Image (cartoon, rainbow, N blue to C red; front, side):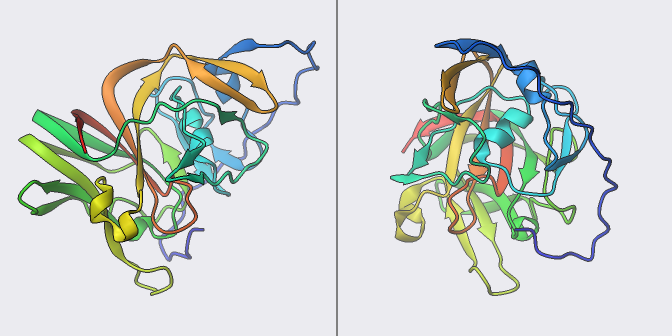
Length: 263
């Protein structure tokens, strides 16, 4: 869904995809380490090979959109993305990719900071990503853009290293928001908060997930399963929806130093 851009595109490399291993005897339940699963890139991905450790540099240039679960898996996170949000199923761009039967999502709403916090954009797959600002709104209503725009003109990508970064030091309660500006007047502009009550039609525009790593995937069959045993370093993943396709991967921001404070 990326709109044409005059910005030069980053060079891409072909990725060799190894043939699948011979079939194994079917088991009722099995555990697969994240490293082996994330190494299996398909022909829809070009760029660096995905790894299992978000602390390593991972950059994947996309030719098609991915589901949020697949996007976070490729980035090395072992977190369960809910199958639905706001009583609507999340859009699955690749219906052959696995779906988690569990959810690690935390309530969106207000967040609390007691000092320094940092932010990094981990990916963009929305056609308005490069026209989307990301920022904080304090309890007095004042908004402060941290990343404007949050996205770039480099097409669709996932990366632990090339995204924009920002830092802020404050204490108190805060909402996070995206400010989407549609210069083409095709989808609509708007400011969308982590607090549903402040959004048009009280809609959910973000999924918030702990940045869990090091877990194991438990296969439940029929392309379903769940991550278990992941550990958190205290950071959270803010996965934003820009308009109506309900995929929540248009802009993904990693935030460290703020914690949920309730609705």
